[in-house]
Image (cartoon, rainbow, N blue to C red; front, side):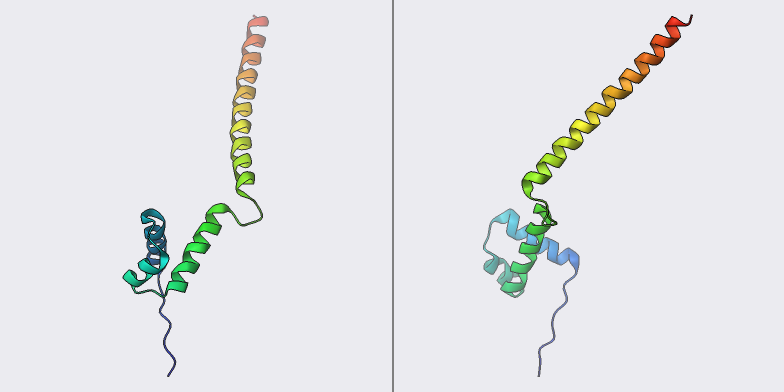
Amino acid sequence: MPQKRKKYDREFREGAVRIVEETGKPIAQVARNLGVVEGTLGNWVKQAREAREGRDGMSKDDHEELKRLRAENAELRMERDVLKRSVVLWVKEATK
């Protein structure tokens, strides 16, 4: 008779992955403690790492550059807005 596959909810999977990552314990040991198949927990950990590293075609360096560029973009927008306000004040002063 075939065995029934257990279904684990998302919270359980995330918690198991967090235990592996935060404690540094081997996947096999954590899997035994939780009553999960070692390969299953290994897959969850692998998926979590890939999701965190952005396996969507962007490397870790690409993510860091994107973060840097977004910060630079925000700073430039702020400078642009300050200049706009300055010009408005300058025009108001000049037209008095």
